[in-house]
Length: 251
Image (cartoon, rainbow, N blue to C red):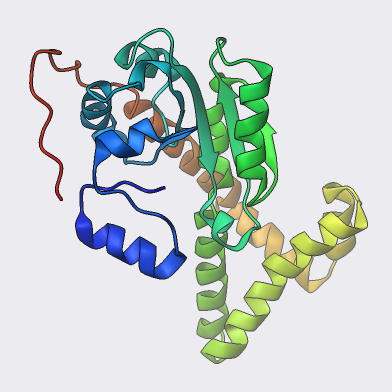
Protein backbone atom coordinates (compact mmCIF):
# COMPACT_ATOMS: atom_id res chain seq x y z
CA UNK A 1 0.00 0.00 0.00
CA UNK A 2 1.38 3.41 -0.98
CA UNK A 3 0.64 6.75 0.67
CA UNK A 4 1.60 10.14 -0.69
CA UNK A 5 0.06 13.50 0.11
CA UNK A 6 0.07 14.32 -3.61
CA UNK A 7 -3.10 12.81 -5.16
CA UNK A 8 -1.62 13.00 -8.68
CA UNK A 9 1.35 10.87 -7.65
CA UNK A 10 -0.95 8.29 -6.10
CA UNK A 11 -3.08 8.06 -9.23
CA UNK A 12 0.04 7.68 -11.37
CA UNK A 13 1.44 4.93 -9.13
CA UNK A 14 -1.84 3.03 -9.20
CA UNK A 15 -2.11 3.42 -12.97
CA UNK A 16 1.50 2.50 -13.79
CA UNK A 17 2.18 -0.23 -11.24
CA UNK A 18 -1.19 -1.50 -10.07
CA UNK A 19 -0.38 -0.84 -6.40
CA UNK A 20 -2.96 -0.25 -3.69
CA UNK A 21 -2.97 3.41 -2.68
CA UNK A 22 -4.19 5.16 0.45
CA UNK A 23 -4.54 8.95 0.59
CA UNK A 24 -5.03 8.99 4.37
CA UNK A 25 -1.79 8.66 6.34
CA UNK A 26 -3.50 7.42 9.51
CA UNK A 27 -5.09 4.52 7.61
CA UNK A 28 -1.87 3.69 5.78
CA UNK A 29 0.18 3.55 8.99
CA UNK A 30 -2.45 1.50 10.82
CA UNK A 31 -2.39 -1.17 8.11
CA UNK A 32 1.40 -1.36 7.72
CA UNK A 33 3.23 -4.60 8.50
CA UNK A 34 6.50 -2.98 7.43
CA UNK A 35 6.50 0.79 6.98
CA UNK A 36 8.85 1.95 4.21
CA UNK A 37 9.86 5.58 4.62
CA UNK A 38 10.61 6.59 1.01
CA UNK A 39 11.01 10.36 1.04
CA UNK A 40 13.99 12.62 0.37
CA UNK A 41 16.30 13.22 3.34
CA UNK A 42 15.13 16.83 3.70
CA UNK A 43 11.54 15.61 4.14
CA UNK A 44 12.18 12.86 6.69
CA UNK A 45 11.73 15.03 9.79
CA UNK A 46 8.38 16.39 8.66
CA UNK A 47 7.17 12.94 7.63
CA UNK A 48 8.11 11.42 10.99
CA UNK A 49 6.31 14.24 12.81
CA UNK A 50 3.16 13.30 10.88
CA UNK A 51 3.60 9.56 11.48
CA UNK A 52 4.13 10.12 15.21
CA UNK A 53 0.50 11.27 15.50
CA UNK A 54 -0.84 8.05 13.95
CA UNK A 55 -2.30 5.24 16.02
CA UNK A 56 0.11 2.33 16.44
CA UNK A 57 3.14 4.32 15.27
CA UNK A 58 5.10 3.51 18.42
CA UNK A 59 5.18 -0.23 17.58
CA UNK A 60 6.16 -0.15 13.93
CA UNK A 61 8.86 -1.92 11.99
CA UNK A 62 10.21 0.98 9.89
CA UNK A 63 12.68 0.88 7.02
CA UNK A 64 14.18 4.22 6.00
CA UNK A 65 15.43 4.67 2.44
CA UNK A 66 16.83 8.14 3.17
CA UNK A 67 20.55 8.16 2.39
CA UNK A 68 22.84 9.59 5.04
CA UNK A 69 20.42 9.82 7.98
CA UNK A 70 21.77 7.46 10.68
CA UNK A 71 19.74 5.27 12.97
CA UNK A 72 20.76 7.33 16.01
CA UNK A 73 18.89 10.32 14.50
CA UNK A 74 15.87 8.28 13.45
CA UNK A 75 15.24 6.24 16.60
CA UNK A 76 14.19 9.09 18.94
CA UNK A 77 11.51 10.35 16.56
CA UNK A 78 8.92 7.59 17.06
CA UNK A 79 9.82 6.14 20.45
CA UNK A 80 11.97 3.29 21.80
CA UNK A 81 9.62 0.46 20.77
CA UNK A 82 9.94 1.15 17.04
CA UNK A 83 12.27 -1.27 15.25
CA UNK A 84 14.36 0.59 12.69
CA UNK A 85 16.26 -0.54 9.62
CA UNK A 86 17.94 1.37 6.83
CA UNK A 87 17.97 0.24 3.21
CA UNK A 88 19.70 1.55 0.11
CA UNK A 89 17.95 -0.07 -2.87
CA UNK A 90 19.30 0.64 -6.34
CA UNK A 91 16.91 2.17 -8.89
CA UNK A 92 17.64 -0.90 -11.04
CA UNK A 93 15.38 -2.78 -8.63
CA UNK A 94 12.66 -1.63 -11.05
CA UNK A 95 13.64 -4.47 -13.40
CA UNK A 96 14.49 -7.03 -10.72
CA UNK A 97 18.26 -6.64 -11.09
CA UNK A 98 18.92 -4.26 -8.23
CA UNK A 99 21.24 -4.35 -5.26
CA UNK A 100 20.21 -3.33 -1.74
CA UNK A 101 22.32 -2.62 1.33
CA UNK A 102 20.66 -3.20 4.71
CA UNK A 103 21.53 -2.33 8.28
CA UNK A 104 19.44 -2.84 11.42
CA UNK A 105 19.04 -1.29 14.83
CA UNK A 106 19.93 -3.59 17.72
CA UNK A 107 16.31 -4.07 18.79
CA UNK A 108 15.30 -5.68 15.48
CA UNK A 109 14.89 -9.41 16.14
CA UNK A 110 15.94 -12.10 13.69
CA UNK A 111 12.41 -12.79 12.32
CA UNK A 112 11.91 -9.11 11.48
CA UNK A 113 15.34 -8.90 9.88
CA UNK A 114 14.44 -11.85 7.69
CA UNK A 115 11.13 -10.23 6.68
CA UNK A 116 12.95 -7.11 5.53
CA UNK A 117 15.62 -9.11 3.69
CA UNK A 118 12.99 -11.18 1.88
CA UNK A 119 11.14 -8.04 0.85
CA UNK A 120 14.17 -6.55 -0.92
CA UNK A 121 15.41 -9.90 -2.25
CA UNK A 122 12.38 -9.89 -4.54
CA UNK A 123 14.14 -7.22 -6.65
CA UNK A 124 17.79 -8.27 -6.45
CA UNK A 125 20.63 -9.33 -4.14
CA UNK A 126 20.83 -7.94 -0.59
CA UNK A 127 23.98 -7.11 1.36
CA UNK A 128 23.76 -6.63 5.12
CA UNK A 129 26.52 -4.44 6.54
CA UNK A 130 27.50 -2.21 9.42
CA UNK A 131 25.89 1.21 9.27
CA UNK A 132 29.32 2.86 9.23
CA UNK A 133 29.85 1.46 5.72
CA UNK A 134 26.59 2.68 4.17
CA UNK A 135 27.79 6.11 3.03
CA UNK A 136 30.75 4.65 1.13
CA UNK A 137 28.53 1.95 -0.35
CA UNK A 138 25.98 4.54 -1.43
CA UNK A 139 28.64 6.59 -3.20
CA UNK A 140 30.11 3.56 -4.96
CA UNK A 141 27.10 1.51 -6.08
CA UNK A 142 25.05 4.16 -7.86
CA UNK A 143 24.06 3.26 -11.44
CA UNK A 144 24.93 6.87 -12.17
CA UNK A 145 28.53 5.70 -12.50
CA UNK A 146 27.55 3.40 -15.33
CA UNK A 147 25.38 6.00 -17.07
CA UNK A 148 28.09 8.64 -16.77
CA UNK A 149 30.80 6.29 -18.04
CA UNK A 150 28.60 5.19 -20.95
CA UNK A 151 27.84 8.78 -21.93
CA UNK A 152 31.47 9.89 -21.61
CA UNK A 153 32.94 6.93 -23.50
CA UNK A 154 30.40 7.10 -26.32
CA UNK A 155 30.90 10.87 -26.65
CA UNK A 156 34.66 10.37 -26.99
CA UNK A 157 34.05 7.69 -29.64
CA UNK A 158 31.79 10.07 -31.58
CA UNK A 159 34.44 12.77 -31.40
CA UNK A 160 36.81 10.29 -33.03
CA UNK A 161 34.59 9.47 -35.97
CA UNK A 162 31.87 7.03 -34.95
CA UNK A 163 28.19 7.78 -35.46
CA UNK A 164 26.10 8.05 -32.30
CA UNK A 165 24.45 4.63 -32.52
CA UNK A 166 27.70 2.78 -33.17
CA UNK A 167 29.49 4.75 -30.45
CA UNK A 168 26.82 3.83 -27.88
CA UNK A 169 26.90 0.17 -28.95
CA UNK A 170 30.68 0.01 -28.62
CA UNK A 171 30.74 1.81 -25.27
CA UNK A 172 27.91 -0.31 -23.85
CA UNK A 173 29.78 -3.47 -24.83
CA UNK A 174 32.96 -2.18 -23.23
CA UNK A 175 31.14 -1.65 -19.94
CA UNK A 176 28.24 -4.09 -19.70
CA UNK A 177 29.85 -6.89 -21.71
CA UNK A 178 33.07 -6.75 -19.73
CA UNK A 179 31.30 -6.76 -16.36
CA UNK A 180 29.06 -9.64 -17.44
CA UNK A 181 32.10 -11.69 -18.46
CA UNK A 182 33.85 -10.89 -15.17
CA UNK A 183 30.82 -12.15 -13.26
CA UNK A 184 30.30 -15.25 -15.39
CA UNK A 185 33.96 -16.30 -15.72
CA UNK A 186 34.89 -16.02 -12.06
CA UNK A 187 38.31 -14.65 -13.01
CA UNK A 188 40.13 -12.04 -10.98
CA UNK A 189 39.65 -8.49 -12.17
CA UNK A 190 43.41 -7.91 -12.23
CA UNK A 191 43.86 -10.89 -14.53
CA UNK A 192 41.22 -9.66 -16.94
CA UNK A 193 42.75 -6.18 -17.09
CA UNK A 194 46.15 -7.73 -17.81
CA UNK A 195 44.63 -9.93 -20.51
CA UNK A 196 42.87 -7.00 -22.21
CA UNK A 197 45.72 -4.50 -21.95
CA UNK A 198 48.51 -6.43 -23.62
CA UNK A 199 51.82 -4.50 -23.80
CA UNK A 200 52.03 -2.37 -26.92
CA UNK A 201 48.36 -2.84 -27.70
CA UNK A 202 45.54 -0.37 -28.27
CA UNK A 203 43.81 -1.01 -24.93
CA UNK A 204 47.05 -0.64 -23.00
CA UNK A 205 47.75 2.70 -24.66
CA UNK A 206 44.17 3.87 -24.01
CA UNK A 207 44.15 2.93 -20.31
CA UNK A 208 47.63 4.33 -19.69
CA UNK A 209 46.64 7.68 -21.18
CA UNK A 210 43.43 7.76 -19.13
CA UNK A 211 45.32 7.07 -15.90
CA UNK A 212 47.92 9.70 -16.75
CA UNK A 213 45.13 12.24 -17.26
CA UNK A 214 43.92 11.66 -13.70
CA UNK A 215 41.19 9.04 -14.17
CA UNK A 216 41.87 7.27 -10.87
CA UNK A 217 42.12 10.53 -8.93
CA UNK A 218 38.85 11.78 -10.42
CA UNK A 219 37.03 8.65 -9.24
CA UNK A 220 38.49 8.98 -5.74
CA UNK A 221 37.46 12.63 -5.50
CA UNK A 222 33.99 11.80 -6.79
CA UNK A 223 33.41 9.13 -4.15
CA UNK A 224 34.64 11.43 -1.39
CA UNK A 225 32.21 14.12 -2.54
CA UNK A 226 29.35 11.62 -2.52
CA UNK A 227 30.22 10.44 0.99
CA UNK A 228 30.36 14.03 2.23
CA UNK A 229 26.95 14.72 0.70
CA UNK A 230 25.48 11.69 2.50
CA UNK A 231 26.96 12.83 5.79
CA UNK A 232 25.46 16.27 5.27
CA UNK A 233 22.01 14.64 5.19
CA UNK A 234 22.44 13.23 8.69
CA UNK A 235 20.90 16.08 10.67
CA UNK A 236 17.15 16.16 11.21
CA UNK A 237 15.16 19.15 12.35
CA UNK A 238 13.99 18.91 15.98
CA UNK A 239 10.65 17.10 16.31
CA UNK A 240 7.59 19.25 16.66
CA UNK A 241 5.83 19.39 20.01
CA UNK A 242 3.36 16.55 20.40
CA UNK A 243 0.62 19.02 21.25
CA UNK A 244 0.65 20.46 17.77
CA UNK A 245 -2.07 19.22 15.48
CA UNK A 246 -0.90 17.15 12.48
CA UNK A 247 -1.26 18.78 9.13
CA UNK A 248 -4.42 17.73 7.34
CA UNK A 249 -3.72 15.19 4.63
CA UNK A 250 -4.95 15.78 1.11
CA UNK A 251 -8.09 13.75 0.32
